[in-house]
Length: 307
Image (cartoon, rainbow, N blue to C red):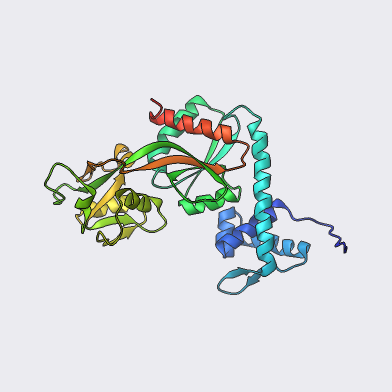
């Protein structure tokens, strides 16, 4: 066996920077994600390559690529970072629930409608609990969860993910929103089939509300006309207000007065199970599982879903 003497070992910070570059494939964006300067991040990566004695990245003027060994080292780095975060989580689990800190990821079609009420309740009930929030798309949040950058996610289910635990909390009905002069349907009952061939405004790909709405309604893009796609519900509502089309909104957005000041009204479907499931997701071996379940109970209580 050949021994390779190493006077230094990589730091967790260097491994974190490497994983950020691998994810972003760009030094500037990786530095921004890590809240450091690009020069600091670049220097740390060069030092890591010097310590390991291998080139981890291929650099050119347009993009950054992992070398073959860089891909292997990055995969191992992610495992180390996740294990390190689980180590910290094990220590947190030894404390009383909600007495330390937690990093929560939330999707944009839930965060503005749920968090104000939930955070107010948490602050009042557990004043020492530090809850750090990241709002992003489901796919990005799951990447951060696997990397150990987040502890638990609040999102719409189902959503695919390996080695993850999910727990349903409550259902959120989906309703049709349209400008009050828009000729939607004359009869009292609104059925999914009434959406056929209508101009349906949706969020762009990557937003799970789009997929959950279409799955719940059992419709495809071939059943409707999609004149525009948007990155936010606010933009869609303004389009609806100008009679460009109709949309499907989560009831929690309506309850949060998102339509206030517009001429947009809503109608529920006269059919069952046109809704999405809201729940939590965490790594399957997290030692804080019991605390996450208690967080779910806390969220339901704050929103009035525990009756």
